Length: 392
Image (cartoon, rainbow, N blue to C red):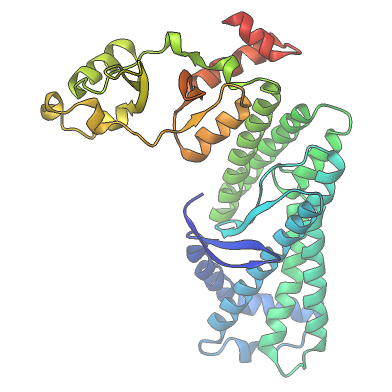
């Protein structure tokens, strides 16, 4: 997701606005304002609203009501995500934030529950809150005098839309709420990773259907939701499968040991470094200083990105110690493999140095992870770490 900024907090949970929200809010306000007359007609027919259409379509009133309804809609989205978040917190799962963005809201759980009962409860909490928001909006709609046409329009609109959104969210298109409910029921009788793969398969199929419907109706929003569901389902299925595959696997099981590492010295020129990268097919090297009395000492890490910052004609004049990274991301060999994977993902880096008692003992890279993942999947081993050691 693009960058976001915090606007406040509720129940100790940070509320953030993604930059895409600033684009979609005026779009929604415009779309609602454009549909004022037909929507008012539906409210008059369905809820006996008695709204004076002429009063709410004059001048700038449609755009004011559109903006008010759009803001009210996203307030409902925040409450929906709070339903998920507070329920998750009750089970001991911290919530990093709630973010409003292009397609609604996302509650960022630090960890997804693998107990099917907990996931079921967390998943349905959001739609239940949306229904309650719809019921509350309808109650206010009934309480507002008929003379306040604009207020009755907004409240009637929000009453219907929140219920519609609750129903839409229950479509079993993983990772939407309905998809998580589906995974919870599947996880009752099969492993969590298998249930995730099956729920994700259903989600991707429904995403394709939604995308086709969006194309036929020329609905950019529908196509966007379909794309998001497909990508999110694939991503979470891969993450859960990887977590299951690397259960009980440590960094030491899959790292490249120090004895097999290609290293460079600080005084190596950038030109020599680039030549080695080309010859040895490596894009990152630990930098080892052997000039001191302490023997070999890890002083940095240099990557192809660092080398590229130097103009090709000047690379003979620069040495590795002038371009290397000294703020090193390290991990211990007895750490869980998933901890290393998450560390690389969160910091958007391709490798971690493995250090024990201050000494470099290895390096773990994304290619090490994917090779190990392939071995574990193909081995079908009950104890993947033993298979990885055998493969080494």
